[in-house]
Amino acid sequence: MKVVTPFIAARVFISHACKDHQFSEYIARKLEVHFDVYYSCNTNNDSRNMHFDDSTIPDDELAKSDLVLFLASENSLRENSNAKKELSIARSLNVKTGWPSLVIIKLGEAKIHRKYLDTLIGSFCWNNREKDVTVIIQKLKEKLAKQSKYKINKDDNGALKYLLTEPSNELLNKINDFDKFESSLLPFNAVFRSYEMSNLLKCIKQKSDSEQSEVFDKLLKMFFDTPDSAIYAKQNAVFILGKLNKGQTGLVNEFKKRMPDYNNPFLFRGFNISHAFFSDGKNDFMNYMKLLATESGSEWDKQRLINKNYHILYYHGLAGAIRESIEAISEFKPSLLPLNVFTLGELSCYNENLKFLREKRCELIVRGVSAAIIDNSIQKIENRLI
Image 1 (cartoon, helix red, strand yellow):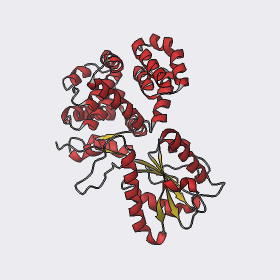
Image 2 (tube, one colour; image 1 turned 45 degrees about the vertical axis):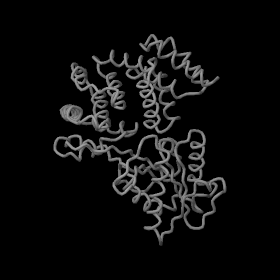
Image 3 (cartoon, helix red, strand yellow; image 1 turned 180 degrees about the horizontal axis):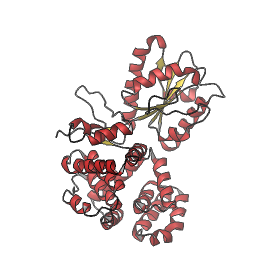
Image 4 (cartoon, rainbow, N blue to C red; image 1 turned 90 degrees about the vertical axis):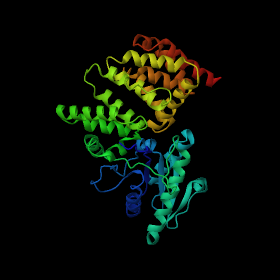
């Protein structure tokens, strides 16, 4: 099978006034060829688009996005405009966490406040729409390439490529067609974010038991038959296998026959963490976590860096990754509890998170988290506060 180069899905949120929907929908349709686009609209025929009441502010969707594209017009810049409130939220998030990026496109003669001029990347005129949107797309790609924490590949002509996130049902169909068409691997060989993975798992679990078993078998085949160079496809496959696991035993021993080593660090991490979901793999997972927290050496430094960057990408930024770790620890979610404790220590520099871990320490130990992992995280946050 030909190895497909992985791409990263860039999530773009378009903020606009309701009265400017003609502009927003045209721009959105053009951007969808390149990005995973979210915007409010009045149609219900595209599952990739977010549909919400224009009277509400979708704070969570803004925080999950990689980039917010604000269409500045007389309508969107009015004081009582929800679009202007979205602009303020996006700016605040960017200042606090560096995520999402914020860019502005000017419609007509809109007057941009000087504090936003550094985010203005161009203008859009309906009579010149095809040329203008081409320039906008290129500038968005350049902006996202600078902020990405992972390499974004270029084609032979040097153009940036992004994976178009597919609806979960279409992605599931490609999993089922995996052994028929090598192109089925393409959308799966990518770094998924949390919302993408959650949507796919939900789609699978809505199927009958027999259909879920077929998906399970296809994922096994994807893991075993795909070369190690297709690292994202293999990690996604083994992660979903773990989440779909219904008490099967013996799989971990089979997985170990294809155990990646330190020379494939991304897959090595994902492979070991996926063991947490298998009853006969929990000891392997716990051993990996202890080494991740305490072992020295360049190989383990790389594992820690990959884990940190992956969480930031998976949960839509540093703030999202910290928030997810806090929520998982608060609820004592069992499968990945040691990982969430460790990751909070890697990411946080906040006194309230330090106090939180100290308060939870005894309960975490009772629930099976190694004291070494907890104390390591406490120490790292303390060191950043000094």
